[in-house]
Length: 101
Image (cartoon, rainbow, N blue to C red; front, top):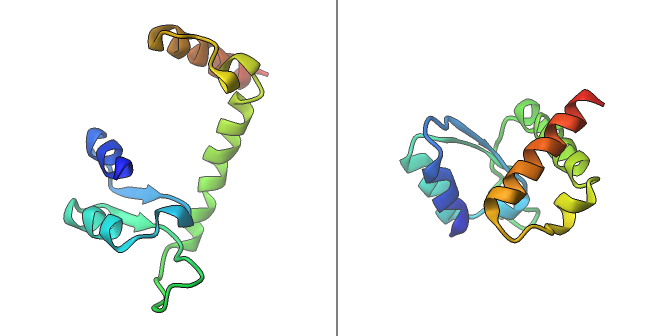
């Protein structure tokens, strides 16, 4: 799973906020094996309810709003840049501009 690879590349992760799309037993086992607390709500069809920190999960909304704000910049949303370094510099510029506006 790509999420496991991404999580393993970030050192010092203690808690992971995610949406219902990441609610799988395998991913939860991976997080538990690496000592990461999963703050992931269970899917509605899950037979056994899984408890999660609802207060911490509400903080995920802040991250979602930041990504939405960055996507207001057309260059970022459509990724016109072919090189990763150009896209990253445009992303940094857009993030700085969004912060100050």
